Structures are given as C-alpha cells and as structure tokens.
Length: 320
Image (cartoon, rainbow, N blue to C red):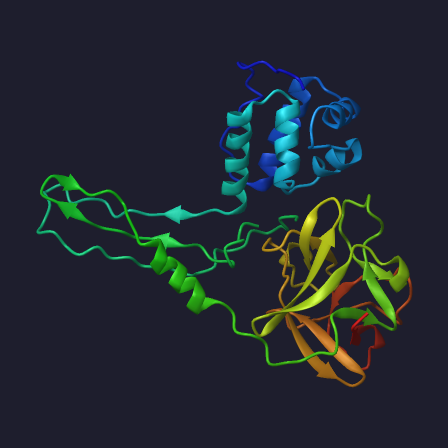
C-alpha cells in the first residue's frame, strides 16, 4: 500500500464536531493521497484482508454519516497511514459517534476545605436534537449523555477525577428498557401484502417504498425496544441501521428512511392494534406511518395524519 507522506496535513485527523465533518475529512484524505477509487480497490484487493470496493467507498464518502470502522481503517491504511494513524482515526470516529461529556467542578481558589467524600451524579437527560437527520446522531449509549461530576480535594490540591465505572454499569443495568407487553405474530411489516424496501443497494437516500416481498431490500425486522418498537435493518454496505422519520420531522408527509440507529431520525415507534392489523406511530408525533391512498408497489412510506379508514396505514405483521 501507499507509504504516504508522514508530514502531509491530510493524513492526520483533526478534531471535528460532527459526523458530516468527519466524512468531509475522509474525502480530503482520499483526495490528498492522489489515489482514485479504482486504484484503492486494486491496492486493497492485492495487499491485505481489507478489500475496499470502489463503489462501496464512493457511496460511503457521499453520505453525511461516518462509514463503518473497517472502511475508515482500510482507507487510512491504503492512503499511507500507519497503525498509530489508523488508531487515531478510529478513536476520533468513536468520539464523534459516541460522545461522552465529563464535567469537573472548579476548585475553590481560597484553598481546600476538609476532605469531602467523592460524589458522583449520573444524568440521563437526552440532548436536544438538531434540525436535520444524522444519517446511519450521537446516542449509541442508549440515547443518553453521561455527565460525571466528581469532586475531591486533599491537603496537597485537587485529586484526579475518578469514578467507579461499576456504578455506571449498575445504573445502565437498572435503567435498561423493560420488555414490551405487546406480543406480535412475527417481525416482518407489510402494508396490503407488500413489504418495505429501499430502491436498490446503490441508493444513497435510504428512503423507503413499498415493494414485493421477494424484491424487498435490505432485510429488516420489527423488534421491541422497551415498551416501544424499532425497525432494524441490515444493509450490506452500511451495516446495521434503523428505520425512522427523516430529520425527526413532525410534519405530515415527512418521508421515512433507513439510517444509522440512534441518529436524528425518529426511530422509536408506538404499535397499536386496529381493525385488520396494526398502526405504527412515531414516538411523540401523534401521526401514523403509511402510504397515501391504496398500497401499491413504489408508494413512498410517509408520516401521515392518522385516518382509521385509510388502508395504507394498516400494517400486518408476519413471521416471513
């Protein structure tokens, strides 16, 4: 693989605040290396286990969300990054996808009081969502930001920030969503006998339409998420993801798409029994998922005003 230029500014990652900025930095990395997509495909095919097809890389660099770790690692390596540089990129990717905020209380400049006990507060407030979808947001840690406030002092000054991670683990164990009480006959969602699908493996939008079940892509299933539900997908190029309302929009007519789980999309749903099947409601939106008019192949999946008479809003759930 390319040996790269150790002094090249494009080879070393810099701090970024969003997934989209991370992808822009990956594009600059590829451009700075001078390698074409086809050259990268040939080099990774001939020189190691991390094969990076041109189409996969091109698609990943056109999205607004970070690619899978193996894609990042392969691209950095073929562009000349050594193991340390690869680890830097992967660490930054992890920081962007899984932000963890630690806040320390400032010390009293007047001097330390008698040694107090160490205290720890864990906050599970969900950060406010920005106004756009973060394609396949930054809440892999069960959608919560952990804020650790640790204060301690000794006669010699401030003690290092420290907290018992066993306490944090215990918190997550007790805070995990409880199983849903609603039982369903399967995990495959259908409307009018048709399945949910993207428009082919090369489609970058992730938008969802009705399709014959034989041609449905990628594989998806309805899974419980506490008392709510998710629709999980397994994309061959982009990995695991979830179906959700684009940009968490509350507007009637907003589209649904597949994207990375725990992103800006509204991806948790309420499932309600109705005549002939079930209704799927995005959490907190007071609207229903479905298609306008009668279900037919190619109808886009939308968020619509709930109408008990609309056949396009009635889901059936089957085992296959």
